[in-house]
Image 1 (cartoon, rainbow, N blue to C red):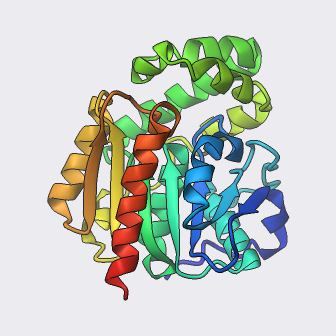
Image 2 (cartoon, rainbow, N blue to C red):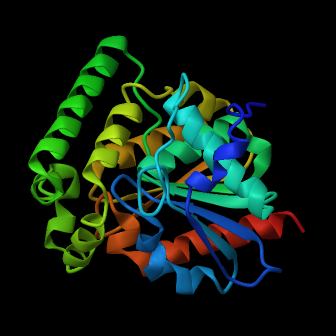
Image 3 (cartoon, helix red, strand yellow):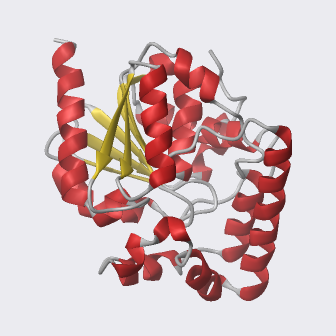
Length: 279
């Protein structure tokens, strides 16, 4: 079992919020790049009826600071800080839900400490890059993006970012203006650091670990219009029966932004099934 190093003195780096009745099972939510815990708001009213929700701002996002020292592995440091928050508030055998960057953090937590969670939901998350040359190319590309973000400013970067093909359907979604306003609250230099440190070209490749896990039950969700992440979810479910894949219609990469009600229904049904199997 990995402990991700000793970060016990740095748990206060991460901002978090708790909602829902104390007697309910825990559900931990991790947002994506440039996000914050605030973006889960459209879902919380549906989730709080069944769970005690712990919403965490990842390092350099929202009200969370960056670590002064990342150590040898930035993903390991990030996971360690999340674990410290879970320990601080007393989360035991809770459910974990991560989107995109938060999904990659959730994958690392899942493969390193599977006994820690009763169930895991992975939304539009990548297990990483295996080939050395592809890893170098991705790291270089993310370094260039970080420089662009820091030199051109956040507003211009957002204009570029949400024109990427992966966000095609989101470009036409009425939720986009509100999402952009939330993104503008971030610090571009902190986001640049995250792009460099947590680039998929510099974080662990987890395909083999994910195909080997036997617990906890895991749900992988992706927008039906997001071909890349549907292919990832479908392949993971083929290789490992512990992982279930559910595509969500009429949306792309940002499922919880575009189809919050549909996604909440899918996730709640999955978690209720998991809890029922423990009776």
